[in-house]
Image (cartoon, rainbow, N blue to C red; front, side, top):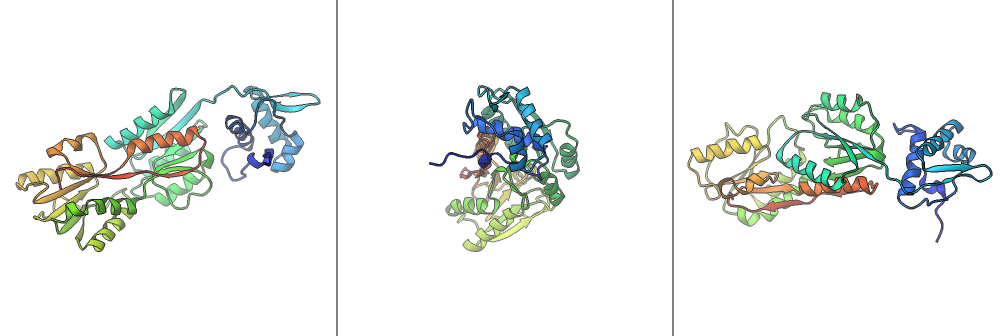
Length: 343
């Protein structure tokens, strides 16, 4: 078996926002943590680093100086630089940026924090689906973070957000819930497949939906929810001959027997249930209700609300694992249909 060469796993990206000396030192630290470089492993000379990585001697020397200062490497005249310490653990400092606060986002957060363990510092921000606030948080940050964990949902401004995300060091980036087209480089993600998820969930519900004729999805005009959800919804209705309708405002929408309503927003669910109760419809018999995103309360309301939902606990846990394992994998998060009394 071929022994890996140092330059097989140590790279410097000239397009990265991270200074080159830090890219060099971080790559060496990661190689030590993964066991690729072991104690007493000899390192290339300053001149060899400069030549092979196409960096200046000053940059190479600064990288080694940084590693000496934190006690990872040492040097001996005539021997050169070598790994002197492998018994260390870098403290993770994470920039966590959510699009909003909600019951299911709390599940993500709690699972993420629990899976990371104690020796971690997390700065947590909420940008309320507002691109301007999103930009301010990321461009005005004062500290360097080991990782940036971002849920990228916007009502407007997604293309500009893509440019801001692309400016982050990709080895430090984890996208949660949604992948944005045009993000380049090797980064990690724990994401939903929005179109396929709703199609598959409704297909699981198909026998329970057979007593209804019309499916209505409540999808506000100004919404951060991905349009791929509507693509999957229409594909299912076309495949199985249900009459589809997109409802932008549940307050004004006529409600008739034989219809199923799929809500995305929690506020819309409250309005829908209030109207159904006021009209004395039997929920789950006259009119069906399916709610996006599982929360504990939906197990209880009106003997249970049927849900189609991402596994938010899995999402938070796998995001932490991607960080701890130094992984750039893209992991599709499971999506579930949970039948309850509302259909």
